[in-house]
Amino acid sequence: MKVGFIGLGIMGKPMCANLLKEGSEVYISSSTPSTNEELKQLNANVVDNYNEVAGNSDVLILMLPNSQDVYDVVVGNNLYKEMKPGSVVLDMSSITPEMSRRVAEQLRRVDSDYIDAPVSGGEEKAIEGTLSIMAGGDAGSMEKVKPLLEIMGGSVTHVGEAGLGNATKLVNQVIVANNIIALSEGVAVAEALGLDLNTMYDAIKEGLAGSNVMDAKIGRMIDSEYEPGFKLDLHMKDLNNVFESLEGDDGKLPITSKTKEIMGELIDHGKGNNDHGALYEYYQSP
Image 1 (cartoon, helix red, strand yellow):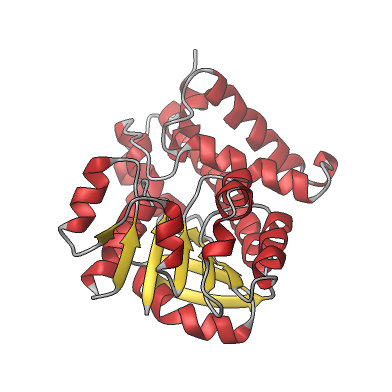
Image 2 (cartoon, one colour):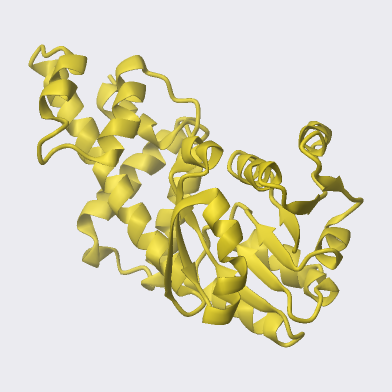
């Protein structure tokens, strides 16, 4: 099975590398020469443009920043016309459920199919190949792409029809954002009460307060180390997608609305490229 990969950034590059390490035949065309060279060393086939990537693909994987990027690459630039009959676009971008459905409809007109399979876990789990993957689409197409998903992910769940993968991801992003805020407030209280933060973490991590978010983010907060595993800008994009998908009814999500407000304030202060664990910086502001 020939695989194309478009979107070789913080997440996409290690995901692609894992496919190559497992012997997948992968076609790429990055605008970053060093990325092409790095993946070529793992036996990637470097071609001239995205159309060539698509034309060589039985499965075309996308890992793009937002809904409009997915639409522009697949539909706006007519890339879908290069797809082989029976091929599948495996879109692992985090976009709106509505855009997933629109792109799926366009692909089906040319006898291709579409699976939306966004991920959770950030750069660390992308490197490890242990991402949590939530996928929507036809069961037959899902079976075709599942071996690839199992290389990139530690868990793969088929949640229903196209669009429901991204609907599930939006739920994930609401919970993660609010967990980071809750953790940030707890750490702020601990500091105010004079606790040693590492000792506090050891004391509570096995109780009800413990979580994957705490394990992943508390070290960044303690060390003020915010190189991105997942950028604040991208998490804000996901929260915007939540409210867009709910027709902007902020009143139904008062906690998420406040989290989004805090996130927006930090982004306005130039912190959008920081890891989303940097939400803690809000509590450190003068």
